[in-house]
Image 1 (cartoon, one colour):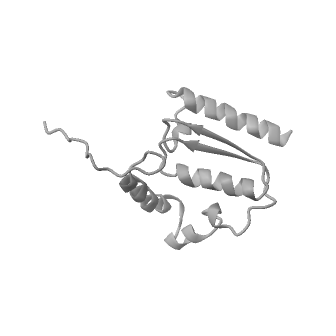
Image 2: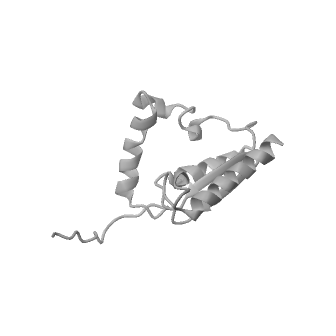
Length: 125
């Protein structure tokens, strides 16, 4: 059996995710939720591209420590704050994109689900 040795010169992004994986993820992701690639340049698909984020309701922004999109989530939360929007942010260290769906096996997923439910209860009164 052939064993793969880890590459020693892998450049890591701010989220600790190798730049090559971040790049591949960003290319692959739009195929799963956009009808056309150019839609990715529209604010409705990428809120960071909106001219203004003012007058939006309070936001809960969740990021996962090992998510290739973590930096974008943090940038979005920062822009919301700069626009005067009330923002609650939580990062789940060591977690990955989509971990919320793993409530049967991850304590962090159950904690996130509880956090989301609490934010909705608060917002809806």
